[in-house]
Length: 328
Length: 198
Image 1 (cartoon, each protein chain N blue to C red):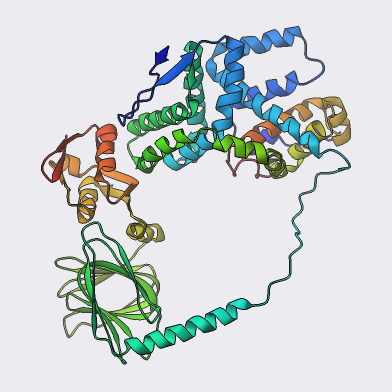
Image 2 (cartoon, rainbow over the protein chains, first blue to last red; image 1 turned 90 degrees about the vertical axis):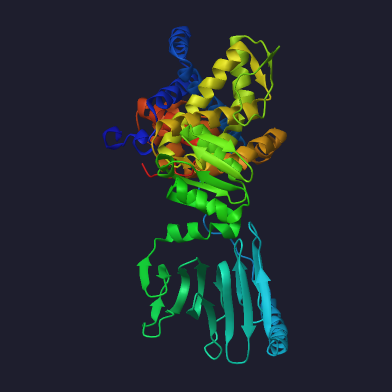
């Protein structure tokens, strides 16, 4: 007997006392020695509080369900979890041919596009559009955005006139991809990045690869941005900061139609919603504006947000013409 | 006999039809109609509550409320009520806490959807029951698994298990009880419990 060396199996499970007791009762009740006195004891425990009862029912339920395991009996001497699975041989590599075909189509499309001049793309408030460029790059436009694509043999250029776009670029050193906005140039060096144009500044966040940011002022040195970097460029300055991965993915929530707030002020959240909706949220007082929230919301449904403001913060929400006022 | 047991905060009124039952009937009903919904309940709670440690308590509170309601009248259908109760408890909890985690929003719409497919999950569970149980069993800590296997597959009594494993009867009892609990948690979709080594 090695009981002293046995560890308590409960230690690893982090169970509540009520569940431990309930499981204990359940186990005892299934034993042959169970008698009337035990039954009375159990009933007394169950009668103490419904919490005991539901915990006990839950354990009984799983204990009964486990009876089905008896179907596994037959010639099984030991339960062994098999980790080695036999693998079927791979199919012939049809993929290679497909890639070659796509490459060919791409080359043709690319050749055709070489001569094209300027293409316009835009989204309305609340809109979201994905544009596949002929070179295999992809541009994803967020709400209320306008941009132009200009390509020639030497350079691919996007002029971001308004809004925000996410770029996934097929890098080509011979034919750089450049985003121009607010007089700043963002040059792709093999990468995925986000560019957001505001009234006074430009915000560039790098997800993958590298980009070069050249500010408008001629004397400014270009900055190389790496994954996780976020740069904010104004007319005469560029600041670069590191950004945690969750923050970065929150910033890209719009690609899936949601706004993700992490410790965001209510005023900041309202501003974000207002980018996506015609009906504007107005935060009436500073105390309300400074409340912080965490959460994920459908970008095009401020109603879900205001309902929560009402329910959870106990705020007053009033609907006017084309605006919703939130106040204490 | 119609009773609104839990009010929806969305204005989506939920009418609960009730039938009076005796206590043993309530227990049967609870095991037959409520507990099989646990994966859906857990899915809801896990999405709404970031603090995983708070979930078992919330789950218990939901069950207690449902059980108490059933003492007056057995609610039908139970799934929307279960999720609505969960949601109200989550909101109460969020109100108490200072930091607000509001993954809830997206779920409000899903609540209505969930009400429309009451038994879909149950039939899936029924079909996959044995496989799920076996997978759950495999995830138990080794000694718990051995005790559970001897009890449920081999059908041995506690004394025989003790002899086979070379441990005392009270220890076997502990392994079985802990194994039962871990199995419940695993079947509820909580992958963390039961995979821990003892």
